[in-house]
Image 1 (spheres, rainbow, N blue to C red):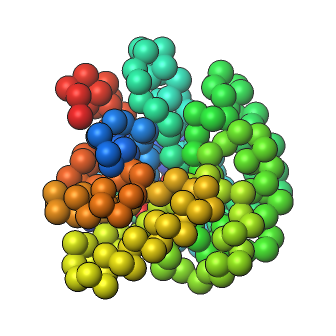
Image 2 (image 1 turned 90 degrees about the vertical axis):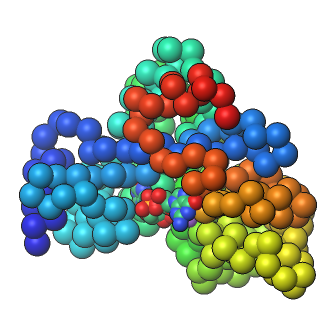
Length: 253
Ligand code: G
Ligand code: G
Ligand code: MN
Ligand code: NA
């Protein structure tokens, strides 16, 4: 279809594919911890296209490898530029699709890209969806990435197929609690107890927790009370172009 064609053309060229950066803040005091890079493809013929549409099309047409590589390249370039400016932007999270993760050379390629950009692996956190992260075949790659120093986040935690037994053994550093849980806050005592339990479980495994889709002060208050580490959402800041990150940081949070 048209979108696949537009994407193929964009990937053949050398322009940025388009990333927006959404801030991630510590719940307790609002300290900035980092940003999540979200792909924002737009094209004169097909208009603006969100990742929910773009990623499946890229997967279906065999373009995900090239798209994933371009996203990483652009994110690393922005990180290097922010560093040059001395901006305290924290750590940047990049979403990694199942196809990318399954490529046998993914970890080696990524290490090479990061050092070519003059960055330490710790500058990046890789977000992997729960279903993929918990699959048996992902484990060697995840272990290699973790050993190389990358942060590893389980994205959309709690809504996919998952086994708690596998979660226990995963070399992850962080879990992102899906928006569907946050939507239910402050909610009933039962909703809050459920949420508190999730935080206790992940904390017991040594994982940092990030709540997604935080939209109201009441939700943020509930997160604090439950002991959630970090938050992300329209209340704290919408995804912004890389050029706006400096201004956002200077304005203070
Ligand atoms: O930005 P938005 O809310 O539309 O993102 C929707 C979904 O797409 C999110 O679940 C996010 O994890 C995923 N996504 C966003 N950017 C990327 C990306 O660069 N690569 C991959 N694989 N997924 C992404
Ligand atoms: O990685 P993930 O799939 O979770 O990506 C987060 C998605 O959620 C992005 O597409 C982003 O644009 C969107 N998003 C970010 N903050 C909010 C929010 O506060 N509310 C809602 N509804 N969506 C959000
Ligand atoms: Mn994500
Ligand atoms: Na998510």
